[in-house]
Image (cartoon, rainbow, N blue to C red; front, side, top):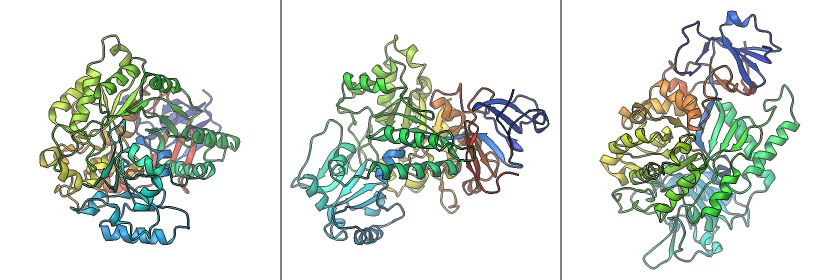
Length: 557
């Protein structure tokens, strides 16, 4: 063994799932980007190395991986004013007025992160924003990422004058006279307006994405499962990695490529046919040093908050009863196509009927396909409300669950007065984000943020998963507290279970000889510190391939 670097920390959580019975590890040797040895400090004194990095009393774990986010898509969704902090309509209008005043002539007013709870019992309507944007075109993305509110001028520029028909369950919401209200539900409807907005240049997008990735690394992330692959995404990843490689220097944080690994899943949408699926299948394996197209993303429903989830029974407004694929059998055919070729899939399913439809599709796979399908990690994303019967089926189906704890803690309330809970009613709201029950049933549970729908910082997410309330808000009541994860389960969701959710347990997810040398270093122990303190803790370093992508000032002893 001739390691490139030895990393020392007083506590190392290997996340291997069982104890070796020997001395607690405090040293990791890295050679060629792979873990070459794990041992005590005393043993490590006999290891030769070109470099030794000692973090003293810090805690090292496998690198944290966010199991669901949208980096490039998020660049578009987060243009303009952040409305996520506004708690009422007056606050939203004040922010939009200020944004309109600062908007150059010929440009659009943009906003994002709008919480539908600000409308109270009213319905989102363009007339609520037209006056404060002074006749400028305006598009506001709601926090769920599946809906938007357009001003009258924006609709006019886009030529949207009435209802439209789509291949997917999207809608230009109209009043009784057939005039658009400005509310646009799901991607196809939103795109009618978004496509006529001035676009950022490639260089502007690249610079913003580079800064975003730097923030990811500083937050503790060493990897992300990217759940989209829109126009220009691969070109951006390729350009950023090439730029970093050209600048390669041993002292440069991003030496060797991107500062984190990206596992990318392009969308397969309703209206596509087998020829389209074949083209998507041919993209699998396309990638670079730290990014790769490795799966396919599908949808069977939308969101509870805008009435496009798929429920067995209507919500309080008579909505959320239609599938995203108008003909669900076509979704099942797509599943058979990809599963039969050993291609991992991830399906967005929020409502109980949506989750059931995904289970139906996988349970009905032909016998000849099932052995191939088991070689790939197939997942359901979100699972926001699920009854007992589906938990039992889920555990038997062998599917992976991918969930976002802060969707629960940021957007629902224990007293059920929020929009999500009001729409569902008490019984379904009490089946909210059943993380603990899924783990008890033996399900692999990957955790993530769904950025930009919720903040990406992993430490507060790890805390919220345990608290079932917002970390740092001790006065809040927990939402269905019986579904809280333990500290170990939460950390597994970002390490060992994240690797299993990607079908990568053989090469990542634990501090094990032969696996990737990806690590996150904390100034507290995530398995013993109080969750609120974990949320406020400091990430001292992140490593990918054994090379520092982030190193905090004063972190090394």
